[in-house]
Image (cartoon, rainbow, N blue to C red; front, top):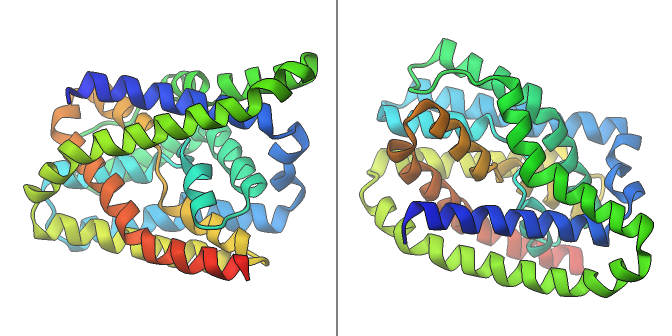
Length: 281
């Protein structure tokens, strides 16, 4: 499938998922993490500090191709994936917590993403330069904050409409998510096969260590541990594509982005199954 079509499906899926969150979760649930400063600080430490630090160390220790190093750096600088809550539910994670963390990371991305990229650009030989905060803000606002805000407005001024559309939106979002996964797998596995052993090792190590970081910094309940573990590995592919497009290196970086998305999901399967069973008990 052509990349423009895949990118359009990504944007449509993200918009629908975020609209469903806005309609199905209350404003109080979306800001619930802000009332728990301890968990909030641990969550930010895991997602925006320790995970990028792991990526930085791997880039410096391993002789990765420039395109792979750049792709991993951009992913590290793009937390708050719009699909986080979907993957969190698959691991038995707390939906209100993961949604609140996702919203928090989207708001902070305006500062976090340019700052993280600037650090990587100064300490490594990545191919993309730092981007301006306003460009990041525009992208995040269009694909995340706008649909969530629309959903909350529907709840506030049209509660009957929200009740009628909440469940159908979830169904549509699930169908789009499944279609996105299937269509991404087709070019993704082909790209993984040509990526090379060392880049694959770097991606697997990044995901594995990030899961451990998120699990042990989350809590106190297990559903919150699993939610933070998933949030630690889930990076904003759409924002990463936007950043690489600004720098004109998207064709070289796309194989790394898709490989991370697929390998990350595969590596996380054992943890998700174990976590969901533990939460169910």
